[in-house]
Image (cartoon, rainbow, N blue to C red; front, top):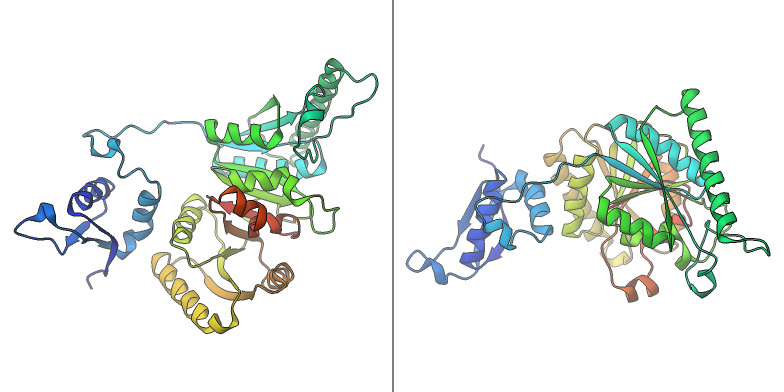
Length: 375
């Protein structure tokens, strides 16, 4: 049976031709419909159609916003850089950091990656003038505390951390993975994000507090800022989380808002973690009971689509009422035994971030379930 065609975009004829060339270079068959056969150049609103199975791949190309750039019309596209695989683990010498190291080392061993442990510290000279929250990165400002003694203290803490890691490697609790340590001076979230943008690690793995821990200001959390602005995947692990590596993850809850970007994010999730076997539960946060039936129909449609695209996956779906959102989500996670919650955190402007905190940011401070933020 011939595979169904779907409309990817409606463009002018010239742009449709550019997109067609780009997609065909990626081995995607493209068909252009509604072309003016007499004067094709002045055609407007032509349909670019592809096979349904190619949709996630094609959307990922379009979402990159690179297909209309000058480079795509050149005869030879730029060659991708071949870089070593890296996993970035920001550390603050707490138990949260050791939890992140435990997970990160096992994951790095499974995918053949290297670990980068990063600690960011403030200089006491500048700290009084900074208005950033410094959760987990406080430097004691005593009478005899100078720059030299502060740095000695940080180096001692870093030595203690590496000693603990070596000890756990020798006991077989951590796999023997290559790792390096980096010290940076500045605002923790800014330095971590700068490294993520320039070095492009595969994922950032960070520890965070669980729901029973003391809750600090939501705006000030380093982990929350990284989640909001990171260009790469972020995996936030509460200290009380049970799973020690991705092999322990059997069921993933994927929160969807019926947005096209969810499709791209889901394909990225499955592609990145294709070597792991887990079931998927689609979750929609239902804010309007009058639309509940329609939302269930949408979820059922999403399930059927992904069952066709990824027949190897076990998929179900559920609506969670947005009233008392976090408690309802907690109840669902416990009932369905969800191991990880996946959230797509789209880029939002500063006003949206301040006045309407994302579900990812709120979940960090509430849940004992690890959160994987997709980009």
